[in-house]
Length: 432
Ligand SMILES: [Zn+2]
Image (cartoon, rainbow, N blue to C red; front, top):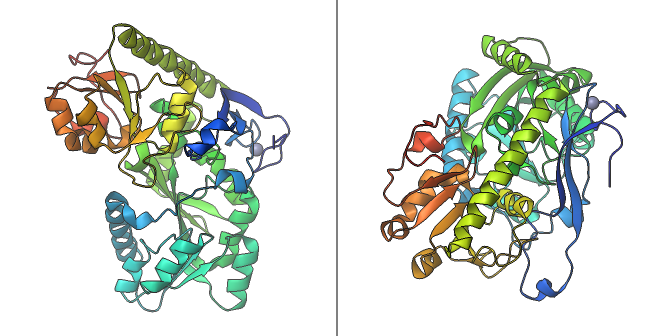
């Protein structure tokens, strides 16, 4: 369904800043039988609200279409996420001196991967998640978890049971909820007067600065900045008090919100940085859109010219961002030989839209294509180290963002080059 008004403030004057065309749902992988049927497509465009500065997609894809996964997602399967979560809990426990007298709630708690760290410390906690498989797993490992969608109704019920929280954590969910006002109202209801809520989400400033347009897909309804979130939280009596930039997922923000104002210097500095970049002005995003189109043109040009020379090209990572990338490139079916992905659930299926067959990563060494377009560029160092044999045998990786870059077989892997704040040396021998 196409929106006509801002999901946060209701303003009816939304400005489309980037149109990625009609795209299939990024996570809707296809089975062999489904190849004969047409795929549902929805406009993938981002609009800016001039009244409240919130960035949002213009189309709300129905949840039953959007989340039609044929395999359950368990957060515990990601070692990087487990480490990140354990460190986050450690930092929270130290900063707020959390102990047995405190109560912590996590929204979208999945299989208890984060809350188990509180359980281990003897801190009372509760998870809330709408996915039944992960909820059952969480309860089985001793993390109390209820099966529900979070919002004002759920918060009211918990508050009625006397379960007000000292800390509420919500990671990678605040960009996904269509009814964003009801969602934020739930936090205001659930927090004790002295309580804090901590949100982590992909930071739109990283997307804009590093041209990470492939983080745009229908599941991500919002692309948050401090400027866009401030009116939303204030509407519900909540204050943005601290912000920390994190390297995870290509650049994230950890935002601390409370029921009383207590702004940190870090928050003020980042807010000023956003203001200087003009994130509350539509012109900032017009420049981003120009860079996105230039990136697509230069990447398509590179790939097409190499194919014309007879080179063979595969991809790595059948993730949602990869679907946005290949469908926006739109080079046609069979342009890429296959896409390698380590997730056994995905192997044997096809990426949506361009219908690229998904294979085990061993296929890279077995087939030895000349190039691998690295769709999961946020794991560049990890993937290239795993593919040492492919590289030793002459294979090159192509990293698409922030600008297309070939990594030759013998180039050393420099993680800082592929980290969140890529400080690429323009004189480096492999820069295009
Ligand atoms: Zn608005």
